[in-house]
Image (cartoon, rainbow, N blue to C red; front, side, top):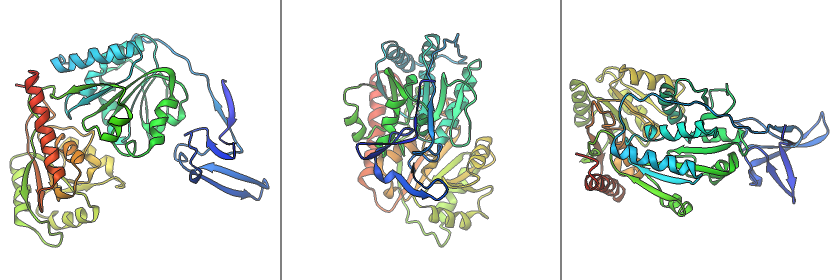
Length: 410
């Protein structure tokens, strides 16, 4: 045992949470216990992970490191760009130096980190691969477990429990609240995604979960300016190409004013054509109510149509059925803008004039990710072309030009 303390403590007149390290006083709730005849204070910020308060002790177990003969299986060779990034990652880990990978969607970021994982575990480093989104954690964990078959890997999110000793962890960022000064290496996928992008305390969680000397590998396809200002001291590695050497699909714009009260021939025809051409299609909405209304309008015309959003109780089941090919057309919110990969996929963004540039780039990045189907359609239906739409298209074209200049796409 390394340390014992109360879950919530009072210091200089301010409450502090020992689990999430929040000092924001609005995060703390107080009430009077009739049974104990004492004031109870608990932290609401991290209560979903496990309640901590000023009455009960928190036990901090001393961390330790264990080497592993870690190896992985990869049924293909890395591209030139992936090899370049892999060497940069290994060097950063060896020197415990942090860096940012600005890699386009579909660049093969997961495979780029394999050699770094192997090196870290061979050296006995404790590693965590984290993402703000449960969907991304599940997707990445499946791919890493398939490659590192002999490793004891803890996959931690709201619906799972720790099984092993935490030497190799794949988790949502919130799960790092459980660890203090434990990890030598933390790899953050989709570092710009909600809620990490809007909650400064979560970025601090990375620091509290890391040892004093550590390496952070941050990965994103759409680094926001706020993030770039925060990490301006880090080395930035630009990776503009996809592993299969095909360019990124460039969004097309088409005018269509959506009517949620009656069927529209242009939209129905597009969906039917997608089915005829045996293409899978994600139709993105920025409004759940509009999505549900359109679902009821078109469900009888479009076979096996379904919809999914963050609070959908059947969300994970629907996504798994989509992967199996049970649904050709899926209406979705931005819950599927990240961490979803399948072949023969196109995307349609309805009311694209209401989307931010980064969201459009991420959605477009769902298309053409697989080597067996490296192309596809990104269609933005709008009521007027906006600056974010133009910025998204410009960003994608710029990456294609850089990849071509470096000889990383054909």
